[in-house]
Image 1 (cartoon, rainbow, N blue to C red):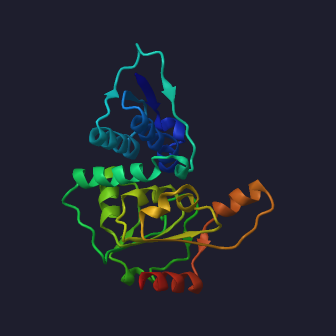
Image 2 (cartoon, rainbow, N blue to C red):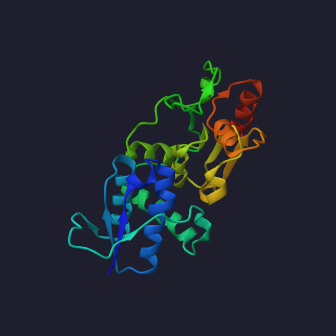
Length: 242
C-alpha cells in the first residue's frame, strides 16, 4: 500500500504549484498503482475541493488520521506535465470528473470573460478605464471565489482574456473549443511551458519582448503592472473576433 501526502501548504498557497507539483502526480501514481491512498493535510478551498473531487471520481480513499502511518510519500513533482506517460489521460479524467459533478453546466460558444487581476497586489492592468467592457459578458474584479464557482465559470466561457497568473490553472476545466488570451509582461506562461494549453483550441501568450539581464530583473519585470494602451486594446478586440 502506498500512502501519498498531499499538502497544499507546501505549494506556497499557489494553485498552479499545487496542481503541477502535487495533485497531477498523485493521480499519476494512482494510475500506475491503484493500491494507493491519499493523505490530505492542510490547505483549503480550491486545493481541497479539487483533490476531493478527483479522489471521488477515480475511487481513491482519503485518509484523515495518518498518525499510525509511517511509510508516507511526499509529493513535489516535475512541473512539466508532458513528461508523464499519463499526461493526456489525466487531463481527460479532470474533464470527466467535472462534467459528472456539474452536469447542468453547458459550454456557451459565445460567452466572453475578462479578468485583469484587479484584486492582485501585482501584475495587473494599470490605466484600464472600462474601454472594452461592452465586448464581454462577464467582467471579473475578484477571483477570490469558490472552487465550484471557478469551475463553472471556466466550463461555460468561450473566450477568456486575462493577465498571466496562477488562476490560469483553471484552463484544465475549459471546453476544448474555448480560447484564451494570456497577457504577460514577459514570456513565462506555465500553460505553454508545462502542458495545459492543449486543453483549449487556442491559447495565445501575448507578451512583451523584454530581455532582462539578471534573475532579479526578470522577477521585477514579470511581477510589474501592465499599462493599458491602444496596442493591447486592438489585440483583445482582434482576439474576440476569432
